[in-house]
Image (cartoon, rainbow, N blue to C red; front, side):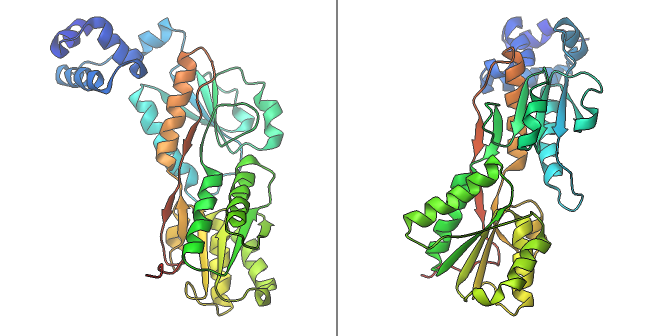
Length: 319
């Protein structure tokens, strides 16, 4: 069986360097990691993960705690799970998916928490392991999220570029930081351009946004752009605009937010602000592992920009 010394000799580095690459990869350069991993692969060296975990009193398990109801129609969490699981594998960690009711089943080294609402924070304070939240918050927890405010600002700027006369924001009717940040981005950008603000807040279901269009159809002149806080809301807007005889994108434009599958099943395909969920999932893992290695000390939040992914619900920019 190849030993740590064999790997060090093969990579032409010290045993301590090999140990750091295995146990604390964040402390070494990419060049060293590539050299050591190449030597490990050539020698078929497998680190004794369980012995290391036992020595450091660790479980090598991270719990992914999902506090909201998951919908099988939308693969948001599946894409996030792929990013989390792939990154955990690189660090020889396992993943346990739990809900609020079964959080205490089994032990772990830390938590990644998704879908929290304001009412959850008192309970979250009782968890005694390093924790990273997937979603911005005002309670001081380390988090990973998109830049929600800048994301919607980008959508307004694009709507102005396309010469839409009216720009309406369809937001989520929840008093949560991510939703408030998206609305703030709309209001800030509209103020900069001196445009009239129109904000509508709805439950995050396509049927509610469709009903809104149906009941208020006469109020919307052509050359109106609907910027939606989620792709779900955008789907309902798109469906009902067409039902009412509106022409997309010639008369009416739609920009959604998320870019996770739903934009691809809409007709026409949605223009949307795509989140990098797989990269964000990997970042959540890196953040929680850094926090574990730092004895629970706070880390720097990871904030990602969204990508404006063009579909068929916005017209081409004029030349």
